[in-house]
Amino acid sequence: LPIPRCDIGSGQWVSCNDTIQKACHYPVRGLSDNTIYQFRVCAVNQAGVGSTSNATEPVITTDPLEHTRTMVIKVYRGREITITKDQLESQMKVPFPPTGVHACEVSDNYAVLTWTEPEPRGKEQLTFYVERVS
Picture 1 (cartoon, helix red, strand yellow):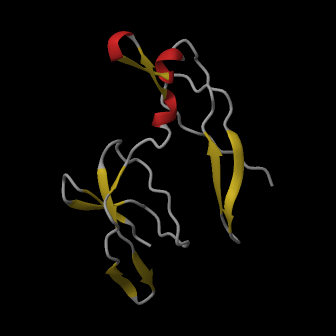
Picture 2 (cartoon, rainbow, N blue to C red):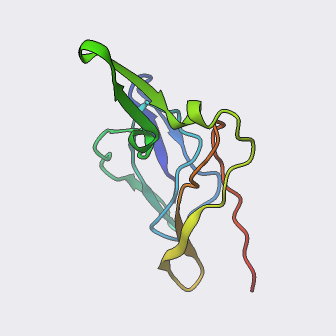
Picture 3 (cartoon, rainbow, N blue to C red):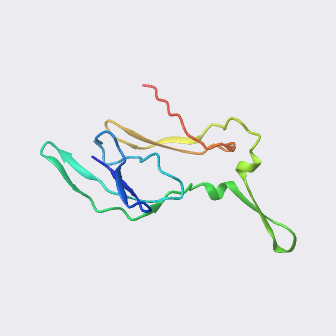
């Protein structure tokens, strides 16, 4: 299924996937942080490409765990200092391993994995490498 996305700021629809998707599930990667997007999908069969779906409600890409990495310290006369764990972990080079890894959805030809971000994580942006054994 072709999956187009639209950055609300540009107003242009672009494809999210290079290959046809067989499942009704697709993790869209390569999005910009703090950007508002909409998505839509269309089905394809041997007869051709169908019409696109209605667009999703606008979504903003944000780090859902950002609030867990921020500490607010109250100081003199009601003033506050905000410190991020990234600042505290600036000396750390390699992150600890992720925890709680499990398959949250399984089908006959795919599995969707989920896990919790490592703690501590270091100050660098995280990406993840997934391995399998059969």
